Length: 233
Image (cartoon, rainbow, N blue to C red; front, side, top):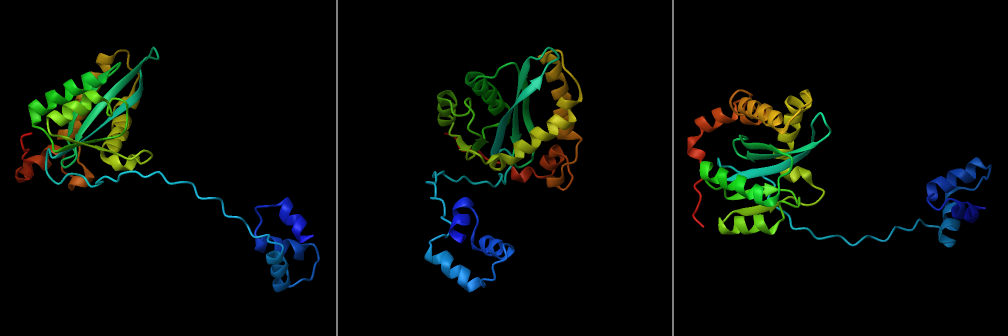
């Protein structure tokens, strides 16, 4: 009886089988049932452990100096009124939380990405590292060559762990809520216009909780001593 039920319900452990027996009117005590349970080798089999994939851990902490580390990511599901998709590239300074770039286009390939980053470096100076996920543009040889030539480390978040690039992920969510989800856009130019208005407000007007409710620009103005001094490659 006990063995038959265990075969019928292979995921039932001893406790469930024992109480099932009692519910069937069997007066057997727990020790007797357990003795039979062990003798018949009805123990639940633990599934064979899957081989773990080794992943290199990265430093999840944000930069402690302004312009020391950037985070970048794509928003890829912004729709125009005619159902065309638009990609938005966001680049964020991790220390000050300042939006350095919010660029919209129908497509942003690796070469365009590198061109945009080069323009940012010309304006801001180069960071020590850039944090990103494993998207095709980010793992391209074009970007790899660019960062190596400029002495910039790429810090990839581990697959399945978006929180390792959490600062720009949070920025993406705020941008959707406060800008991109508010209206239907007809053209990419309209998207870019609203993004420019939004990120200017984000940097100069919007208090940021992680900065003691200063704006990113106020934080920078107040902490000029925190500027990162890049070392030439």
